[in-house]
Length: 346
Image 1 (spheres, helix red, strand yellow):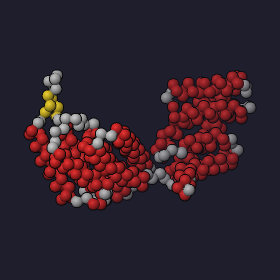
Image 2: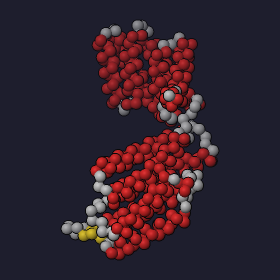
Image 3: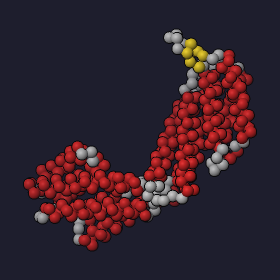
Image 4: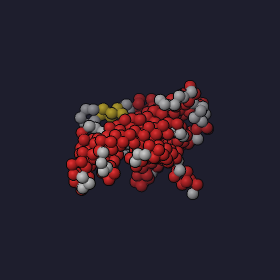
């Protein structure tokens, strides 16, 4: 239950509530209709201050367009179904043509909502509408900037740890089930699903990092914080490369593998050792890691010497499955070493 409350009452909810209160308070003080300003304030609370400003710059002219159409058509047709239809239709078309897609929904909603409150003094109503929109934009942007400023560092670090551990588990599955021990179709399907979920998590973390970088433009970071942000970016880049090499392992054809039982068992043990290192980074030992790399390298050159290339009927040549598997494993070993040399990760 506690977790649910935390999710419901997050910083964005608090900031939205505060922005709505301040916006409506200012509008009431000026004796202006608050509804349009409040709508603008709600939609302007974005994940980052940068997004609030960029989208706000688009929403202001879009809202002006919607207001102008509302004033125009109510002066021509009065409060009628035709007025609502024309105001919505022309607002959508104009915003679309001017590439104001971000502000299209707000502009259309406020355009039709204005029809109910305009009875006279159309020009004054138009400028009041611009004023309320500006208040909503400015208040929500200020709240987003100064009240509980967005900070995604904890989520980024948690995601990086999770991706590392899940990648180790995935590598273990490949070693035990997909490559040498079983041909269980359900297990393969589960493994592919895990692989796809890993990619999604990496993409989400990448998005959070971009948010954090955008936020850094408006909040001065210390040298240490800047370095931490760069380290997080480097770690995620390395994890994405590891994920890429694991994808290559999963897609390597296995039917033609000619390793002996002893060689296959050795590869499995090596993969399991790598998987364990990824699942438990604090147990990383450089000497043991380098020993596994040396053994894989010897096997790689031996396999390459025995059968370098596979010739296809069309004359093209490709590496065989054994060389591909060893190359991908060596690549992952190198990347894991690169990742775990940083003591802060462990």
